[in-house]
View 1 (cartoon, rainbow, N blue to C red):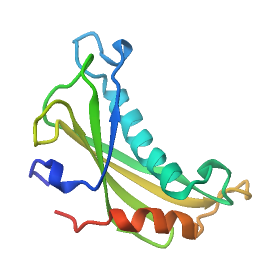
View 2: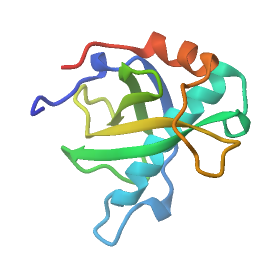
View 3: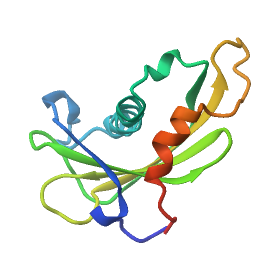
Length: 147
């Protein structure tokens, strides 16, 4: 996947305020902060779209995979917009892509891949289980064909 994503590639949007502490010693957003933004974009959407506390469901999504492609620097003090899209909804998993945008640029500054696998929240072994219907209903509208 070498094509740089644009705003048109995403469905759901959230604006996040950057903080002084988000920048690293080189003056740009710390790599770990991108992953916090991915987690927030996904889980905030699930909370808002379902109206549920997703942490207390009998089946919960655990992160099975993450990655990030960086295209240009971003950092404090300008806000960041996160764009969210779903590439795949399986029986027990969801594959998300999250675009990071700062300023008016149409091309993403970074793009993350984030995979949730649903497990039984009541089982200490956390066995894989089908995702709740409320989660499926919240993410299916975000489906877009993969590039």
